[in-house]
Length: 37
Image (cartoon, rainbow, N blue to C red; front, side, top):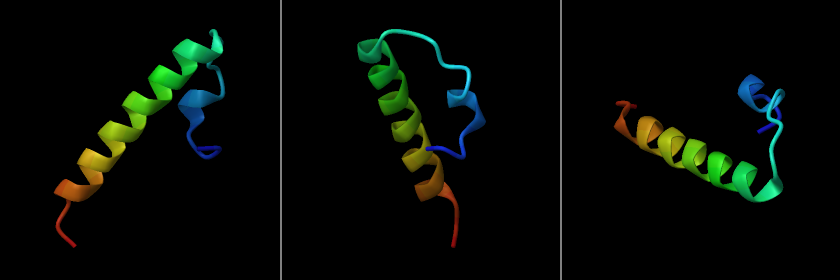
């Protein structure tokens, strides 16, 4: 997660940050599973 530049400027409460990160991870996993290997 440290390599994700979008998280550098994230300024919000921890509860909301957790929800945002969870959504990003879901989208990341969906995208990586769609790619042919």
